[in-house]
Image (cartoon, rainbow, N blue to C red; front, side):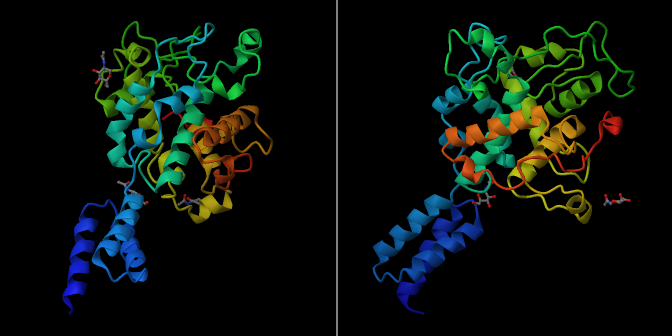
Length: 321
Ligand SMILES: *[C@@H]1O[C@H](CO)[C@@H](O)[C@H](O)[C@H]1NC(C)=O
Ligand SMILES: *[C@@H]1O[C@H](CO)[C@@H](O)[C@H](O)[C@H]1NC(C)=O
Ligand SMILES: *[C@@H]1O[C@H](CO)[C@@H](O)[C@H](O)[C@H]1NC(C)=O
């Protein structure tokens, strides 16, 4: 072998060691080789440029505080119910724990941003004060209804403490398990399961979820990353293309796309109605707007954005176990 070839192989190997994906590395090496550059420095330059491309950015590198402010621009409006609670820093702190597990770091720029846009679309829809827009019209005339997310941190006038008899997660005396968080959590058994996963005693201190924004974001990301049941995909897996539908899924028209994340998180509350569920459409509107705000563009929303024709994965009659 010529010395030059050996040198090239060493350069490729060195750069590949610093990269997150061997597949990406091989692509980069092939691109550099195909360029047929004789000079060692040019070869290195091409390889390095490619390598930087493949190295996945972190969330804070591809989603800035300004974008956060523009996605949730009315969360601190005078009418909002969680003024000063939600902020970019808490989100990034919570996300850091899940980035090594692939949250917002899988698949390269477009897929990464698309996952984040989908995640934010769900939390914005769940916590939106869009209904207050009419009242706020005098202060914010030309506003988009999708800018009112993160306006709540908990259910305001719960008419129940959401306590159901449970051996595993028994209700603590005096604790109310009403909706709290960015993907609101209800019922003692859900607080119990979440608390176990996050190693926080939420069964005795359900209120932590509406007192600590980092914890509240972490809870939402955990829900996003965790399948509802074994052998089912998480919303994360769906958005990063890691979910392969089974024959049953295909027959039930459950296909990869944003719609499937609605199916996972909301089931028959919004999916499988064969009609345009209003709340489902609100979610989709958020998703598309957020893609625009994050420089991905709604034209890159992917297929199967809605779930109206999908059979639901976990019908609510059997969902609460
Ligand atoms: C980085 O992105 C590539 C695809 O571009 C993906 O295969 C890989 O899993 C990602 N790395 C991590 C740590 O998720
Ligand atoms: C908020 O929750 C996070 C995550 O559980 C924890 O690390 C942090 O200490 C909490 N902050 C306060 C003020 O309790
Ligand atoms: C597929 O659907 C059939 C009929 O509804 C059901 O009996 C079967 O258990 C399903 N298989 C899986 C793997 O879910």
